[in-house]
Length: 359
Ligand code: NAD
Ligand code: TYD
Image 1 (cartoon, helix red, strand yellow):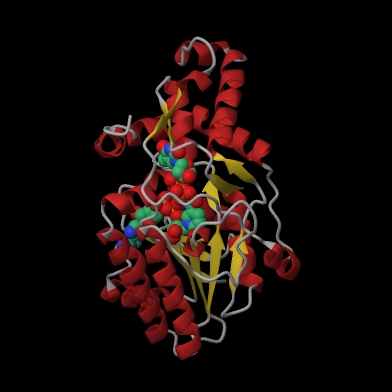
Image 2: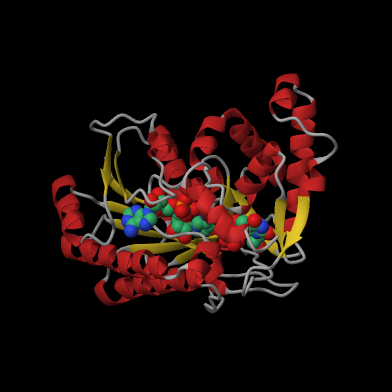
């Protein structure tokens, strides 16, 4: 029975991971530590009841006293670090929180593990990172685990710093650490500041679909459940001190992706009378697409070579984009309460700031 500390477990990927692990390993104890920033949402975890298998703690990964208490009292033997500020656009508007959580917070968490794991034998510290640390690709080529780091946004730079700290703690102190670098995720519970949920919700509501620049930037998309399974795989079989690239082998241009989301929503709504009454719209939602001012320093292309995960650990994505995006759109259609609560309040201020002078 493991005692797994999941930091950032109330966010998008963290909560999907907690639910996945709960289903797969009923006897592990999962302790979620989350600061509940705008991106953390306890509703994601409402199906879990506190008890021997699960505990939620509201707190900051920068709080070393809180971390020491948890390591000691709970006997934490596994850490999965999702806690982060995660949105590139917000890092451009205000980079400080990214340094505080992603760099200093990861440092504080590493220190807690180093201090409290005197016999690191069967312990694991898995740091969840991103492909954005590698920078931007041209038309050809892929990021491998040996691609030099070349972060371009404050978000990517803060994640790169945290990855370097994790590496250093393995090499210097023998901390049993491993890092994963994953491509863009999508799926249930994703905060609608990111491309896919923003486009789904705006398309349902008949609002404009803002595509940055020329819409030709390329991302590699992975359904979140495949990412959760990859992390589980690396936790149990990954080699310490290694990094593993995780990706969907599914590159898409932003404009093509948004068009695809519109087609599926058009099709879903025209096939369902009650939905077409709820979200009335004439014509195709593709007509809502408009190009807006580009993101400063916008990386052109990300593409992951995940052959190390495939060959060494036998993992591969189970969802292709068509199945993953349909599940995702259905989830947002079936859970309007979840995103309606989020898109009132603070989100509106963010939306005005981010898109107000772009259009
Ligand atoms: P998210 O923004 O949805 O969630 C982040 C969570 O961390 C939130 O619940 C938030 O409350 C919590 N948090 C923030 N600061 C904290 C702090 N100081 N202490 C404790 N908790 C704090 O992010 P996400 O999309 O779920 O991403 C999770 C991790 O995966 C991040 O580290 C991100 O860099 C990485 N990642 C994300 C993607 C993606 O496409 N979303 C891809 C690759 C890697
Ligand atoms: P995003 O979901 O923010 O992820 P990341 O920047 O980490 O890759 O954005 C994905 C891509 O979509 C990126 O190229 C920026 C673009 N984009 C838009 O064109 N319009 C939008 O409103 C958003 C949020 C993103």
